Image 1: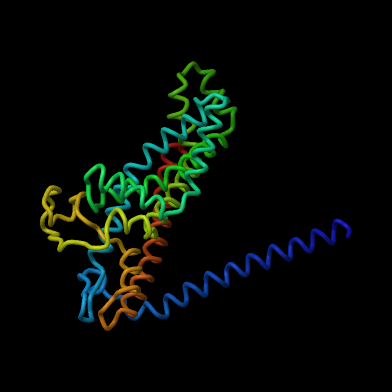
Image 2: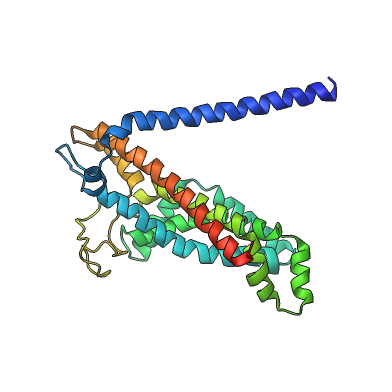
Length: 294
């Protein structure tokens, strides 16, 4: 087989794979829209779910998903930034660094159910936080760290070495080079990692069953005292998220319209992830322009 024929066959194969992926995603989104769109309404999005009657909503579960996302990102981003900067700029090439990198890769391959059981034993029981948003946030942080650390490290390594050397040649410190030159240049890659991690927070269910719980107390959205049991901001209350709610009602839902609620919640979950991704990229683009003046 000559090189020209091999190139043509490879091009056709890659186009076919791209078309198959596009058809698969379009079919999945079309199925969700067809089944879930009739259920979506403002009342469905904001009202509380019903256990035995039809007509319930997913308001608390949707709020819990966003609140869990915020707490998880507040924990994950500083830790992953620090670890990624260390691995890219400060860690020496030795056995300890290789061992550390191997541990990070191993951690990224752990099944979610294992992380959930660890979170249950450590955060729920040993730390005494019970089934709570805080326990769920720390369990999801374990998920996010390997991905985000690697993304930060790879993004920093992809910055041209000449930029770093130019900064050092001006006499600024190593940390100032990292903070004012390397991080702004690596920002698009870091934002991609944050978006991937955030999508995982929205869609994760197995680990949250053992940490954040499968119920949500009656929330008073006029009470913003974080120490009150009925406050939406209380990080130590149980918090069933949207993904866990979909899993639960499909397994043990007793309401007559359980299928409609499941379809509507699944569509809303996909739309929320889509809007979040687009919004995060837009905000990241603005921050990148502001920091680099480009």
